[in-house]
Length: 238
Image (cartoon, rainbow, N blue to C red):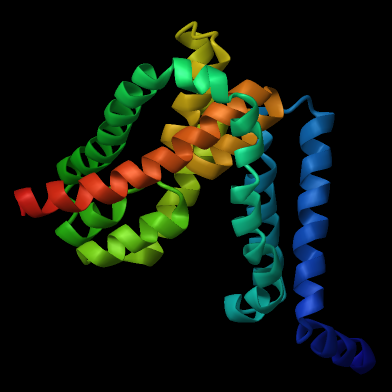
């Protein structure tokens, strides 16, 4: 028994263990997701987060220890985001023809995302710091955390809300679009990308390449628009 405990102490200190754990859990979650016909309530990111959190709690492993291995996956977020340019390039002609619709949709979506979060939190009695932290919820995490830090909010709270927003968008976004009878793949993708950034974009790419291309475009443009507009609007009202 002591030997097993010693082996676990040795393995738990190795970054390779947590890297392998992250990859293995995501592969299993993705396989389950596909086997159950891509049920939106079994989003592989959501399943992976839940499973890994339970494992870390059960083994009493700190987040910093876990992140020493998981940081290698975190590093790949950059190349993965850049890779979204490939489907964008393939749909470039369609994007040029839809420039006006894209601009109008971007402004409306960006404003709605921030204002709705702030208004709901304000009605529920949230303080100013919380309101700031919630405003960029639909922007990809690194940009959203930068906006929050600049405005004096809590980047850690923003990160949690951004992840939850992405998961909820990936799970319920297609259902809402189906209920509204929106069938155009470009419109569906742009809506999901604006509302639920990278996680929603990953879901859109799984369903349709055109939808994924417009979702990736919306994710990038919304990050740019929000990072410009939100500080200006906040300073105007504060």
